[in-house]
Image 1 (cartoon, rainbow, N blue to C red):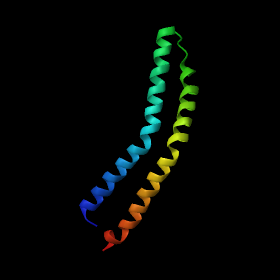
Image 2: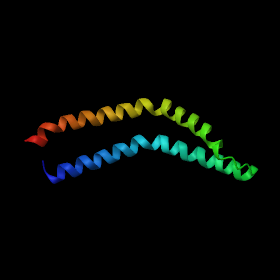
Image 3: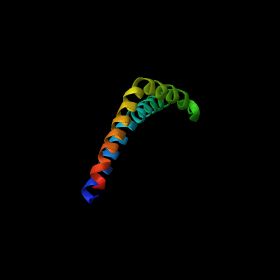
Image 4: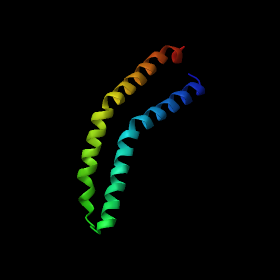
Length: 89
């Protein structure tokens, strides 16, 4: 196993993890910003107001993107298993 192979696997792992986290994080960011804007416009200073919309939004994001996320993760795992013989030899 060479240094190049390790760096390539690490880079591929980070890219896949970013792709898998992006739908959930972007959804939470957009909903959090919208609730914060609503709170500042109405001067409602309730800290727990953003939890339920974020929870619902993340649930919807997982329903919409979950299949793609699972396929991406399975393809990444298959790629890693296919690399094992070349890493050992």
